[in-house]
Image (cartoon, rainbow, N blue to C red; front, side, top):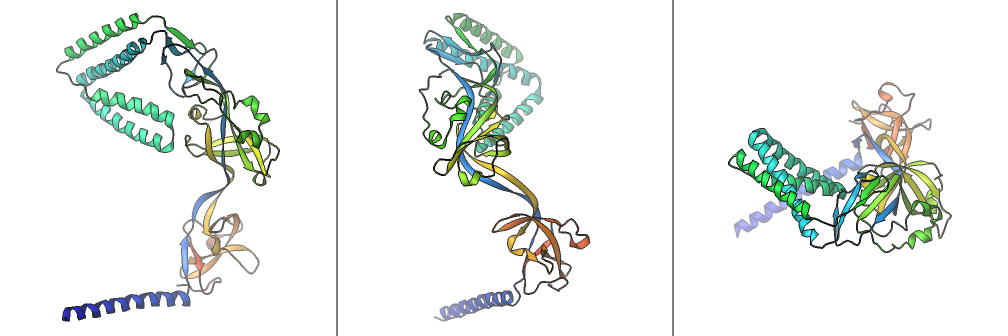
Length: 402
């Protein structure tokens, strides 16, 4: 019974101490609401959120063959006359082709096993290659770069398999290599009726066809309107071999609120930041702006960079950056006017406040970007790391704040 009463008294004392502490803090803030923050360099953008379509000059390839083997990787450059895929009439050829691919991978593993058997340092390099491959795969998946991720998976798989082969002697490895090479030669000679599908002109290969290749074409861009872009439907997809992308330019077409595009002009250079699939910002040029329909216009942008990295992209959310600003970040509430009407901020210099004039570059509700006034000198120049006063009872040059 006594311990229960003591506990209640102790709890009451703790509660009173907490309430007293917060009461003192509230009183201090009300008596002198002094708060500060540090300034630092950063950037801000005027941007428009859009969702649009990627347009390319594309040609799809089709084959009625029972078995197809692809010779190229996603986003790989192709020369005129280069083999895109090989078609076989027999469906059983697929089993043979699969066995050939597995034997080629096995051959690579055994050749590497021979190298590591003769050179101990090669095993350490392989371990490092596996670690780097895992990190590269994770980065590609995080950034949505699936074409790179596919290549990373293949390389990582090969590296892991290489590390699993152990032999008792170099002669044993060489004997297995000879046996695999003989089997490969036998299988390759057994394949008949092979037809090579080649590129008539140079381009970039993609294994993925979606039916928009004949709908979204560079020639159709001039006819795009908000209505036609909203009603897009793909044609029948028959490109089982893949497609070739020609030229160096790709386009991005999106419907945008007309009110947000008043300052856009044909030929203007902007920045397009895709939500996924491309980690870099793309420099784009305004190619056209359509007439207004129901408050919307169709904006077409062109880009001559990163075409191999965008082969798997079609309908994409993005951020269209109209202008970027770089300056010193300060809270918008810290901006003040001096007696001459000059915009600036008060900073803590020693124990007193000092007014530092600035030019306003960018303003939002929460923060602004500024730069020091060019005529300012000495301690009146705002610099990164300065302690800016946000709130205080009285602010003027020289007033003691600490």
